[in-house]
Amino acid sequence: MLESLFGSKTIEKVLFYILINKTCYSSKLSLSFQESLSPFQKGLDRLEASGIIISFLEGKTRLYL
Image 1 (cartoon, rainbow, N blue to C red):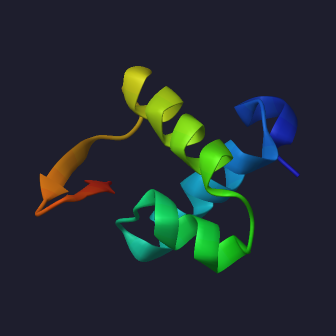
Image 2: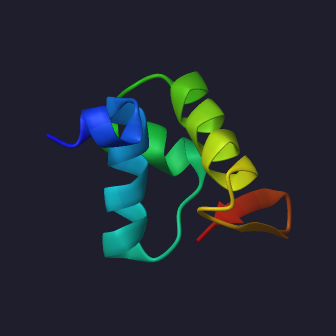
């Protein structure tokens, strides 16, 4: 739907997931969408590097908002 704006389906899924759930982490995204972990990790890193989302550590888990 908005893939052309965001650059990939994965980025679109991440942004909509955060919009609805407020926070996320890569393995939760992978389980929720039943897809490989790597694209979500790369997408989250890309969004954070762009300043669109931020992250912090909670224990050993990196949470994104």
